[in-house]
Image (cartoon, rainbow over all chains, first blue to last red; front, top):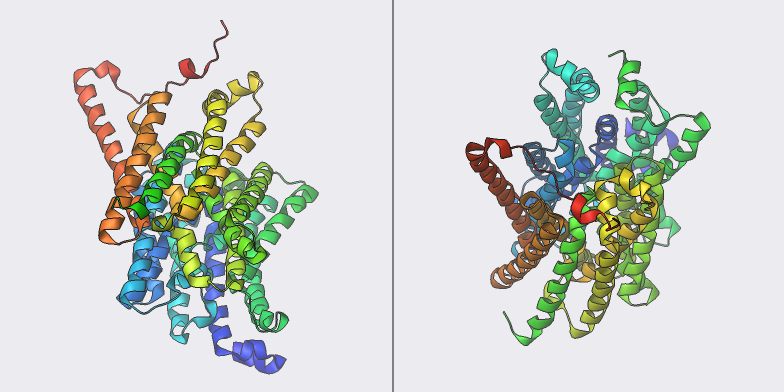
Length: 301
Length: 288
């Protein structure tokens, strides 16, 4: 479809294969992160979401010397981190901060080791940069379908979790009496979050991955009370950031006389500016910050 | 391991560990781990900016610490605290990746800024570390009581005329100073491990503030010494050892607490139940 669009627009930007792959992978990351981000923000899990991204860098670094796909590496380590977060008691509010911090520290340490092994055992240079800050334009075309499949699986999981997760956020006791296990819902949410973060880590880099999770969702929960509307707006914002970022990075090669600026810089800057805009917008609309209970009331839950 | 060129490494890392242990105690008490993670990474552009401007790296780091603290404080007032910390972190990191890509030492610089280069500390690097550490220690000493009270009982602190906002800025400022000082030596990502793990382990072992503070310092100094030794011996990056030692320390402290709790509950059933940190006797000024 993109080739077809490029044909119509006579636009060299969309005709490049690597730009098409970047757009596909980046868009799937943006959509999944926006959907799950709304729940993550409302549950107060922004730090956990960020930690999953940072920790997944260990997987990305390991993929170089193990010779596996970076997506598999990011997914694997992020999944392990999600389970250990749950195990260390991330659901208890008192423990959340410290538990996340410990997992984050250990994961980053592991990533330091793997990056060192990359440098010593393989001839990879710049693995640290690629893992930490992303490498959108160097994706092989073979990455398109796996990324889309991971995104589809994560979205399907969120469709199943939608109501139980809202109920667990609003009234855990009521959820328990209805036969919903808060523990399982929490774990599944974290695992789905780790899949979303892995996709984001692949596109904008492990340390910047949480921008796609926290940014769009954090901006829209300021201005919308309805979960459906919030999710829709977050998706739009995420897509705008990714597409705008890729376009600007592509064009920046011509703007700055042959020195292209990094894609992730543009994506993150757009996200940050949109969050800043949401602050006055919230006051103009006269909204107070949404609480999970209001979200659930509007969802009819 | 104790050769002449290693002496500066030992001195610098010990100073950093002591200050990180003390500040970490308050980070864990105030549940501001995300801010403690965000500040070091937000100073990441400082080194690259300094190189581009042709000034000393420390000034660049201090400049970005100031920007990060101001931004973090403002955004945290305006909305969710965790969202604010996350966004400040990623934005300044992205700026850092841009600035670094403009300098000509991109790839190696990224690794050493994130994960540190402990083995390359020179005598000239010691002075800023020592100066900033003593500043932070004096600051922490002056702020000890109000900070403790404000962290544990925010309402009580307000009634005593302690402004939460002023305390927050001062605390973030101290944290930022530690960050700027430690970052060239242990790297942005490891400052965080030194801040969280020893203090978290100490607070699960002791309910008395001073005891926990002392334990945190001992743990963090022990941790970095062991990490340097292991790193020197194995040639693996020090970051790996700091991170994993932190996790081991924390989980064993938790297990120790659990076993002690079980032991107590079989002998003195009345003494069971979680003991909250005993802050009141330590934090109340002697007014009566």
